[in-house]
Image (cartoon, rainbow, N blue to C red):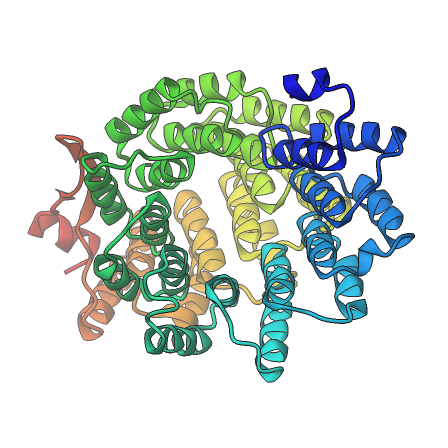
Length: 519
């Protein structure tokens, strides 16, 4: 740039070179400033000029500026050039304006593989996998041979759709053309992610093992896949193998691994990741900070979670929600509700998970009327349809406060079919307040849904025992024996030598089992 500013009469090539340099740099918006200078100096614009500017607008997410430049290109003959049209599609797709991308695509006189790939990737990156698959089928019908970019886009669409059948067909096509695809790391990474999203984690693991070359993206795909499939311990084992490899974890690695730590209570590994992030100056990463808040909260370190949250320069809805849920989980209900109000004041719009934290906080604090208000606010103001978890929170809210008739009435008024979670919440409340009649109603509905859950029998047995109804306790014991249902011993998740481990912590004596009616 210094040489450029000192040049007395920079030519068209020099201007384009500077614009291209900024477009691929960490400051792509500066390419637009140079473009404006070029325009003011009446330097002739060519196809490459527009293409580089479109790239800069795409990377800077400057949609309106991109529209203006595209309009300028359309007034000349440059907009019809294949190279320019392809970068225009990429611009609009990157800025989530697929309508404009489609219009450019439809008006093109000729198309190449880059054109089709830009459209397929645009749909997939904007969460519209069916559009990407439709475009792929159209391309296939036109006789266009896909390349590795096409395959990555289509495999990613299969992952989003959980379309295992099509994903396997694509995998077979890749295997039949090994010279074109099998050695490509990006294709392998996409396949690992697709199989993981389709709950075929062992197949994802096999692809990972068979890959001769692995970059950090490949490791991230399998670590994230383990977490997605609730196999967090294996995710941590893989992360520890990565640590002794020649590769360095990136932000994506750390976020996935922190989620695994949160799931199994691996606090030591979580702390080590936190220190590593500080050493690498990753702390400004919003997703990473949010994962740290969640990890510390779920590992019982609410003060550390607060500290990370308070240092965050920017907070999205996930960050606020993680802290609210964490506070509610630790019994800091008033603080969770105060934080929720601060979130609203900041202009952030809560989602369904945020309200789960809010309703949980109201339940633990005994704020029934406030909980009802927030439930209605969620539905009426934010148009969030309650899920079964929200209804479960409301039953717990009424139940803890001893308002069991209202809890039962609330279940009967539900807009969706009550499931075992809801009826079990009512049964637990009946256990707390020794309400036999409603307990029998709850257990009757539970038996219709899931009659082999030992906890339901135990709760009802305890309610009968608290009322001295030993004949009914004996009936429960007999039903359990006839159904082959046994009380499962309690388990505790602990860390030993930085490794998560499940330990059996409760073995009831025969006398206790007899007394409670379990044996």
